[in-house]
Length: 249
Ligand SMILES: [Fe+2]
Figure 1: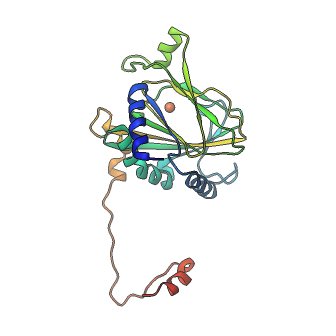
Figure 2: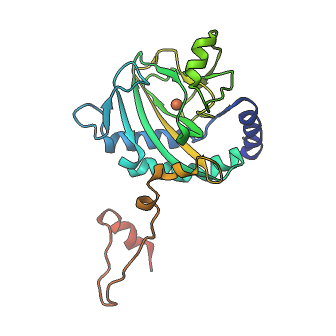
Figure 3: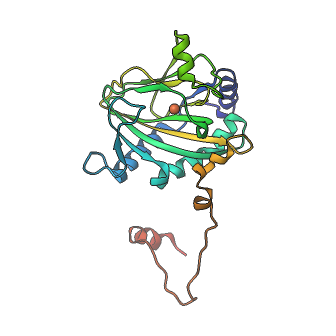
């Protein structure tokens, strides 16, 4: 796959329709490794899970969730994806936040539109328990969200038409979450399905104040390193001791 050509096509599709499928946004092995690490660290059941187990207005059932500022690897993944998605959109983006979510069997994501911090949204599939692809749905229609909620306009008009976009592991869909209705209307056919939602804002746009979820002062800071005196001994992570010995100096 020539990603440079694919990005050009995806950008055009995104500009014209409000969404674009990005096949293998992450290599499948990277998606597997990422989800495994998340499951190992956040937990894989109710007793061990360190994030939230909650039902919001978006789902019909309770789901495992985690907010990116509560679990740094989610933020790190989003920060690393930022130049990729900036290239795809042709905008200089800054992350607002991300959410990890594991849906249980039969759950849906209610059709909705997003708040201003979701100017450019990305849904990334990290894994399915049973390898059944699950579709993301996006409205055909663009809604002007400046005065009324898109869902209210759609309810009044009736006849909502939605695209169905099947997603494989590692696939992502970028969409304009503010002006297009979206969700997952077909019940999850797997025992569980794991995704991450990432949201960015244009740093030169009207929603730039949502960058870093308004937590700029807390998050965007200068690091500092302090060295010990010259005679301080070396320190090596015990798991790397053998590797260090054979690496030579
Ligand atoms: Fe959304």
